[in-house]
Length: 430
Length: 185
Image (cartoon, rainbow over all chains, first blue to last red; front, side, top):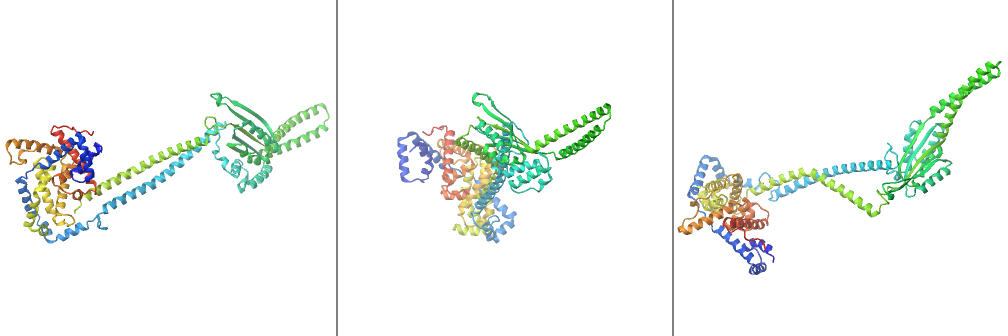
């Protein structure tokens, strides 16, 4: 038996509250341990002294309380009257005091305290959950925003478009809907709804009736930049389009190991194929960023056509005048006029052709990047799980802290209630 | 007279019974108070107050606990409250007339000194420790009764008594000049 344990049992030993077996062990220990034996001796000595300390009751006390009771009985006849008349009334009061009366059990204060505690904890859990739910939602929002922002920069494109981090999980219909926002000026678009295919065909009709320049900017993350660039070029050809520009760059990072390939491909595809090309995006790699826009040039186009028609009519007129010219002076004047008209016609038809081309073909700008080496060199599932664990751990710590902040005042309240109930419990009448 | 009968009479306002009943307990009550208040003036005041309180509440005694338990409870609670209330007042030395006087001068001097140390050691404890120590060591009550008197949960007296005794032993050893001396091996 160890000394510390022996000392702990001194009190029980003095009161004879230990078994004979334990007592034997202690005696054996004291025989072999002079320090404990000494301690035991002085322990009993001190307490024996306490027991033997005599106190003399002074006569002043003996007289004092008698006098006070007589005085109290005389000055408070009602008190003695009440006591004389109904000891039972007093007993009833004790048996059914106001507080625990409705249960009539001595356990009541404890039950009440426990109930108060449960209510308090329940409330705080509810509040805690509400708060936690809110805060975690905020966290998620921040996370997406930050990530989307980083990805936008990585692709060299800081865009105001909605975060695309989850783009690959969305159906294509949603993607088209993004594009449709760009052509909201088309009146028909407001009536469009339903599946992507329906929308696609209707969009083609709209695009034919109206002159709309559609462009897309897409950032794709992939391990094999060169291969994907090639596939984008093939994609353009297979949809009847062509490559406008293609380049692959090697960006040197801080160190050689940080070197990253990036490709830039600009293709033009027939407008009616635009939507179909966009459906192929997921097969190319991870879409980090996608921005589809549409510019309605119908008004300008119609205006140009009308003005061109006007100028053509004027050209015909001048040609007619030319045939009727009588002298060199007249011919020169008409020719001069005709040159100006033809210049206008060429300028307008050039613009018209440009618009025609832009609306017949849609430009798609691809940026192809390698994954950020230091951020995730194809993070192993283990590392990923570890990171997830870390962030979840942090979340739960933050949650716990906010929970404590919410619960703390309630705990204080509960403690106060508990202390009040306990002091009442200890002082209640027997 | 049987105590039960005496109590009933006292509850019904029999002045003689009241005095007889209370005088049976006056010594215990005074000595209990004297353990809490080393100043005899304080001890007398509180003990008187306890007597009055018992008298006033006689009507509410409901026989649920033993009468002595009920009396101890009222007295101890009063002592604990008063100790807290008078905490800031300096502890005064006990005058000689507090100590029993049937001894020779030599013996009496030793007794005086030891008694002073005992009371000083007790006075340095918290009122809760004092209560449990006095009820057990001096009044010799059972654990269960002490629990009822102090309103403690069952089983807590044992550990509190252990701590109180240890604290008392240490204090007494220091005050009687023997030092700590009993470090755990």
